[in-house]
Image 1 (spheres, one colour):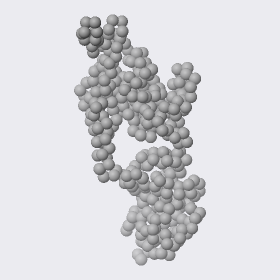
Image 2: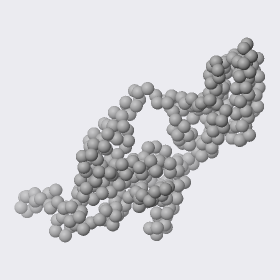
Image 3: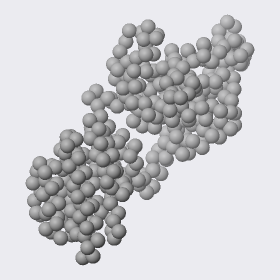
Image 4: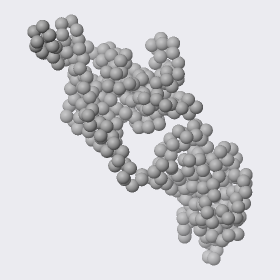
Length: 364
């Protein structure tokens, strides 16, 4: 770093220092600077807790916990003159710990921080004003992947190599190099994002998105499925979907997850001695598709499908016409709000299984 002396028309070097030479500490100084001005890290962040220790069965502490403009959790680990070898491992552990934080828990954590700082402000209101395009009627935080920001004056090669590997595997990590300088009585800070290189960051993100789009669609998981349900229908939707799924797990052989790019689905499957059977597919879009067209014996016969239809009509409270018995008619997830109705759907699947077993054992 240089200081331009206009009178002498000369650029004079400013003395580079270490934090230890200047007597600065990680917790009392660097952490506080970032907390009071998160823009030091090159982006707008909302610091929601310092020295966060809300991890079960461990005494470990995260330096700073923050939210980004999309409402995602950001974990900030600060080191001074040397990153050390374990900073990436520490951050990954903390990300795993924080991955299960709910919106309510995040608001509570932030409110505790505000109260401790004697700031008479409302955590939920501050978050709502900070996060871009937040839906006040469906207030969901931490719905995406957690992000890591590592801060140090110098990064060891094993740290930067690991950070680059994590980026290549779609884990969002930044390394911010922060260097102190002294000019007379003034202390200056130079911050530089070294990973990813800022000029290439947007290109890397777009390249990763293209690779994901071109790749074969990934099979949905229960976690991803329920996150999508929560974004669309809130906690009530999650409660309904989760309860039905857990009930179906007790009677089905397995749960088959779909591979849709935009909409998730699952199929409770019964693997009989001769075939695999499923009677409905549950979609993140809010529909329950009755799988008449995929019925196996003995329900290939029209009269048996009518029998199944009559039982399912009780669940939805709506008549299913005969012309739908060769297709996939739908009912809405709202029709399953009642626990009693969800249990009826499970009982119908159990009845279906019993009928299949009886048919196969009869040797027809």
